Image (cartoon, rainbow, N blue to C red; front, top):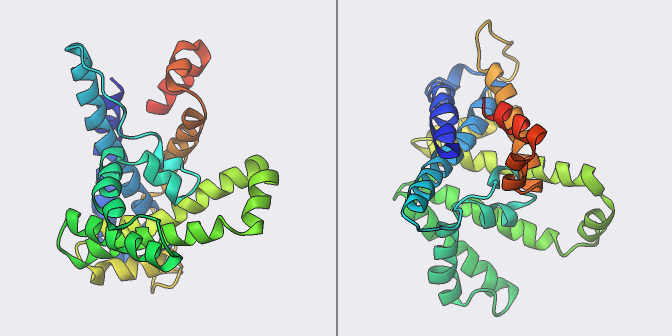
Length: 257
């Protein structure tokens, strides 16, 4: 049931605003671009996770049990956490068959960085032999390297220990902010289309001062916010326990509605 809900209720409906945004990006303001780009991230998550849940559910009817392939990746605390939760079979495959055979993290920092970039270069090519897919892959590598270096700093240690829930939420929002640039690279047909949209995310595009229209995709922003909050709560709690609790199940049902 969860799989069909993710696919039919969420993914298929978000596809409408995604298609509209990427087709008309030259006329949209930054907030509308942000909404459409974030909607695409949630769309592919609900799409892939929905299909996976359906397959897992059908397999259980025949007595087979498979591990989940997605574990609330859209509220990950950092990019490394994101890829430990997103498309787990794919991220595990590129780790085991590309990154580790290259030498993994055994060696100098430059050696490790080289292996990370090569791994994510091929991850991009795996999705398609096009510049925007390769750019998406390299962007993942850049984010992973940046997080590796940041996690070694004193400020990271301090914030992890003393930041509490405020830092926890800010870290997840910032991770989503960075991922959004990758969503645009992945969805855009060419980098020529992706670059203006990414500039718009930073309020550098020509339509940065365009006002709110009578009909726009802002209403989808409310849905995305609900998705984020619900996913955050579910990621913090075991979903099976949520379903077993009456009031938490009501929250779960309302979030899906």
